[in-house]
Image (tube, helix red, strand yellow):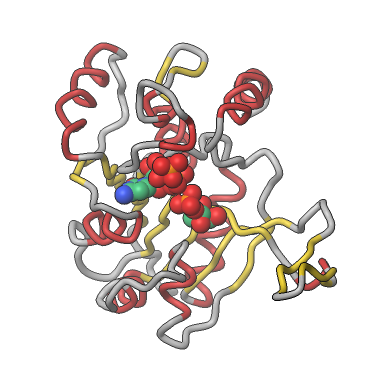
Length: 230
Ligand SMILES: Nc1ccn([C@@H]2O[C@H](COP(=O)(O)OP(=O)(O)OP(=O)(O)O)[C@@H](O)[C@H]2O)c(=O)n1
Ligand SMILES: C[C@](O)(CO)[C@H](O)COP(=O)(O)O
């Protein structure tokens, strides 16, 4: 039987959160008494106590993060590294700390409501096929913008992509050797550029990316439900 590979999580939290219009980068805003980023890290540790966690932070926040971890007596061991100007640069910096054969999940630091079941399913699929991405079906109708206005498109042909996005480490490394391109909005788009197939794993409508102020209101509700039924 093949031994299972070491699992890593790169939790990207190197952004400024401009759309949140808050005085703090959104990953540090407190939810139920601790920064959003701590909730996110805990999800991966709850899933697997042996996972190795790499947290990517804005360079000027590294010291502040260490202080926050001390203040909150945050128990989860992790490596913290400085981010890049873009998400692509931040993932690349996180990936540079990972060597050898492994499975790597890339997850947004501002998606604290990912379930352990989804993390498990994404890792299992990546172990089988090399690349797996969590996604949900759209609930709204979709229109594509055209030169003359817009046009309805069949929504059954679309998925909304979330994180975690899990990959065999060698595939992810090769992908992030490529020069950054404008259409690289997530890790799957970078890996796909190599010609690799991407498997989809069912996500959850609770696995929101906290992006704009109204997401914080929703997060206040979700965190209560999540703490009751993790
Ligand atoms: N240079 C960057 C930009 C983004 N991210 C991370 O990627 C995730 C998803 O990005 P997004 O929600 O866009 O975060 P921000 O870039 O911080 O937000 P905004 O675009 O509103 O400024 C976040 O956890 C964010 O911290 C990162 O690690 N490094
Ligand atoms: C990676 C991602 O969360 C998948 O939905 C998304 O692409 C991030 O986009 P953002 O513009 O960096 O928030």
